[in-house]
Length: 196
Image 1 (cartoon, rainbow, N blue to C red):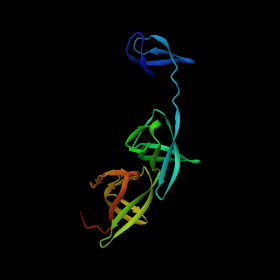
Image 2 (image 1 turned 90 degrees about the vertical axis):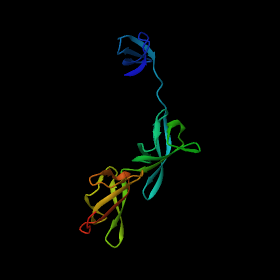
Image 3 (image 1 turned 45 degrees about the vertical axis):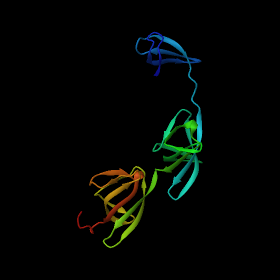
Image 4 (image 1 turned 120 degrees about the vertical axis):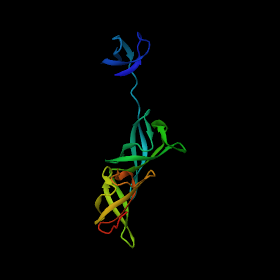
């Protein structure tokens, strides 16, 4: 289905493509009129430079996008790094000398991204007297829930709250998020907590 102006209805309507050749033969879904239209040009595919941060290292990779496609901060896309493909989240967009929140692919000079398939989740765990920094590798879509117990960095912990990358803190028991959104988990060692 494509949306074009019907010569009978004189308004933009959905049309079903009946045949593709040098021209398209289409039928209006409103009045049934069959007519020919020029075949629209195939959109250009652009290869855009992408810097992919994979926790401890960064790689220069590439992302393929259609010229008229729009990319925004927070979008999830695939980046090609040699023979490997990574799921990434867009964290920065350069359009010429400016950093922007969204842009058409043809305006983008560099995408700054971070890998979200495997992420390192950081935790600060209160032991009573000290706070332990713990690290755990997790799948980007793995869920973490406030109030739930986990084995983290080889220790049994319970999450008291979660600080998200985009600002808010999840404190209410049962609230959850995925690993790729977590800036830091706060909690305590299982069996050492005396109440809230």
